[in-house]
Image 1 (cartoon, rainbow, N blue to C red):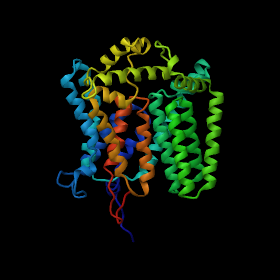
Image 2 (image 1 turned 90 degrees about the vertical axis):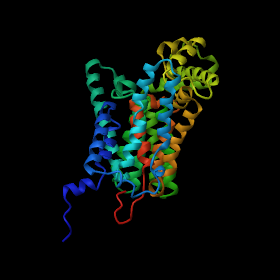
Image 3 (image 1 turned 120 degrees about the horizontal axis):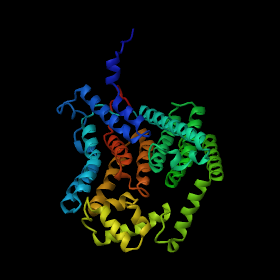
Image 4 (image 1 turned 90 degrees about the horizontal axis):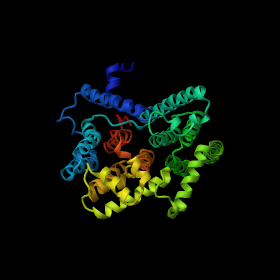
Length: 412
């Protein structure tokens, strides 16, 4: 007769705090505090001591996302040459997750099970979709506008760009679980269709582009590695049907995509007073580049970035984006402008560490999460708001902390 596993033993054998956090990530940024508390409580329950924590690794650097920590330290140093110290300290408070999560995972005794992580994250993404559709239905009954099911009207829990990013992550994790035969084919197809459809309905152009790239990557993977030709062809066909149908019957999405294409193909004709999202990004990128050329080494300081960018927009007569007080809407430009070239390099390092850290059979899916997050930084200052900082720090530190375990007791 086999040994009976107690509830406590079952709990201690799994990083429950991580899975709960994964569930909360796609739902609502204000829930992130609950996730952090769950991680800390989980850590306390396990009673991990400083002496115990090191038995799996000869070198701390192999389990520590030093890029994020240096990124935070540079922001802290940037206060020294900032005039607006009030904004600087506020920014430091928001970015505390960049040093909090590396420390938490440094002491965390359990290696993540990517299958359970995927199930938790997908469940959270589905729950967020249900909440958004319920809200859209209620508002539709109230005012009769179909537009409530699209764009920012639909994504009411967080900005649509962030939500779309997490939906694409859930989409990639669904592919992973399907390939591991952990989800029935019919459920996998349903989830892939659901996440694809809602990403299109979110109206996030970058989200849609990343979804397309993720689809092509996974279809190529299942065709070349798994010889699943039928699934690959079916996925592409259904994806094209969803994309075409949404584009046809969603005037908001059609307008946003057409405006984006027009902005990219006719940059010389953009009005300096424009506030249209695509044109505004191009204008504010131009102002950010002008400022970077004048402060190429140290940047303008953690606290002065918004003030300097605002003044540059006025100098360039970009009055529309100046009145909106936009940040650089590109994390690489935003970080370079704030804390200089070292900030840019440490930001890159914070992605390179987890990207190269992961090995083995989970390499493809985990790297896809890093790439999805990385690409999202090109059109949003993703690490300037809690909706991006907390999930980004959590995921990048979790992956950097990855370590293979013994074959006898492998939780992965």
